[in-house]
Image (cartoon, rainbow, N blue to C red):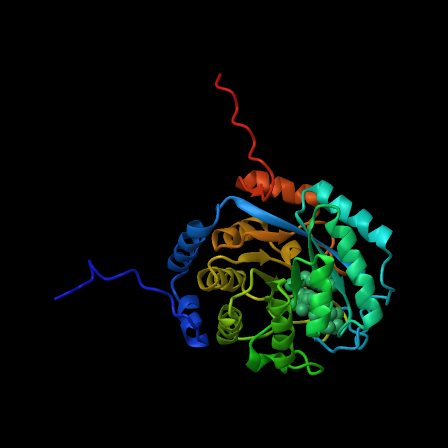
Length: 333
Ligand code: SAM
Ligand code: DTB
Ligand code: SF4
């Protein structure tokens, strides 16, 4: 006898394994996309995309050895080391981002972790950007619990700190800081009451199983991150990953879908790498459940599609930026 008609809807496993996420990734593409879009529609307006703008407030000269990163002092990438930016220049950039339609402003610094003097200065930047009526986000490297509390008090809404890849692949990419230390920073951020932005990079030579492992790690954070940036590796000349074989585009789409299914209420951000993607591929990522992008012609040190180009894409796809009213319906003829 079958109970299928009366069985409750299957609940997703509360802890994901790399194996169970791999099971998602291995589905026929149409089944995977349908499942992801179904989950997406249960929690979000499928035609709304959140816009975050990025600013590198302290560029280059970083002591870490992240193999993908143009800002490491160890690689000759032509990125010059700069100083921490002043409040006025940061506020000017935040105003421009807001005027262009962004709702969140993310400030990135090429540090292993901020020292106390720098942290106090960043807290002032956060306060100033918040006063402009934007959500604030920072990515500054490792934080202590006290530093996280200081940033929270200054008005920080989100902290970005990526796991980057699966634990078993991590050592091939970064040797100067451990996976465990990343988890500790994420916990400090969580405990300070700051929303967590945490994701990774695809296309660094990892296997499909390792992509599944990254998604399982993210989904098992308790609670899972509010914001999940999925970056495609930007291959920068001079970095150890400069000549990496590009990842199959549909493999990227599949991983976005797995992020959506395993973290149903998260903002899944189609992050770095959009300049190398066609609009059709980006549309597939939105169909797979991505609902946030980096908006503005620069990421940190590399380029991003410009605002006009993205506005055109939104028009073409019928997407609306979060926080902006839908166009009024045309009056009947
Ligand atoms: N230094 C801090 C840290 O690493 O935590 C904050 C800035 S760091 C540049 C922020 C994130 O940018 C990294 O964790 C990585 O995921 C992403 N990133 C850096 N270089 C990238 C690249 N070439 N392609 C894609 N993502 C990249
Ligand atoms: C994230 O996950 N991606 C952004 C943001 N968080 C800080 C950074 C992408 C950087 C791409 C390479 C660059 O422009 O330097
Ligand atoms: Fe430094 Fe961050 Fe780049 Fe790693 S990713 S080298 S920590 S700036």
